[in-house]
Image (tube, rainbow, N blue to C red; front, side, top):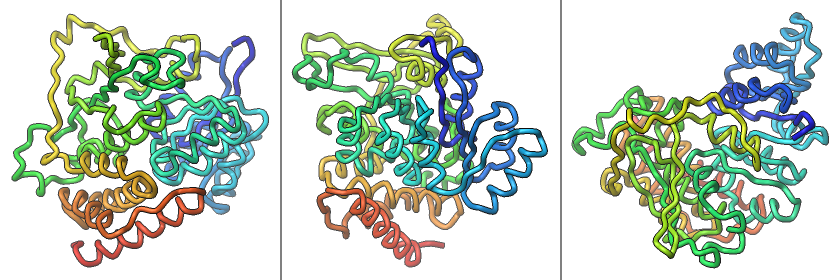
Length: 396
């Protein structure tokens, strides 16, 4: 790592993006910000550009681009501002970029993340939806273009650290029996079932351990986030759904575990801070200081584990069913969940209706093979239409 690596941060104003910039700022001799992108928090993006002085910035449309360009020019920056999906793909695949942090939430992150993969970049994957939607196609592109794919979700990064370096030969070949995917259980782990329908968006977004955006916080509360991670783990590590077991671990100190056939179980522990997996992936295969405090086991005192209750967390069951069905099912699951969570945050449906909408659409939409990206986006669009129709019939 003698040369300064140029890094594009997709989704710079979100929690992952900000944590990435914090790690980069600690190592100016190793990393430099090449491009920053943002969608809605454009004032925050402007401040990040002034602080980190990237070559490029990307915003949703031409009007926002003109406004940001003027703001940065007044600040004396030469940053070039691009717009739209084309701009995202350009800064992801730019010849001078070494690494891309893919932290755009939802389906919107798929094309720019694939652009980075197809350009053979080191891709730090925080956008789980990219793999959920297009798993086989995505992984084929990684191999075909020689990209380096490094997981950023704390759970997948933990699994990556606990697996042998040659795990790509096959989990059974390298002696892995199971992957144990940990989950905090979110804010409603012990809430009486009869009270869940009355849950408010503010309560769902009040995660007891992690600080995250509103959409991801709701996914954590329903455990859809863990369901999507289960699907992602299957693609990242070439595992079957039955080889991935979800374990609720409220302290969020053990980030995941790998169970070997000889009886060994390897775990990765650390304080719940996303800078740890970000620093691990940025520096891989070496290690750098992330700014995270050392783990104090004496303060923690104890670690607890429990099995997830699928009556309490039906989204986890639906995600596992989608993983087992394969084909277009995960893309449909993801699309309907995005619509449902947005509707819940807007107060148009209740908390339990999130799973109800997903189950309804999954039940009426047949699973089809996914053999090209256009099928993925067609199924995504179709699922959103069906979700909208469900919302018209059942929404407030």
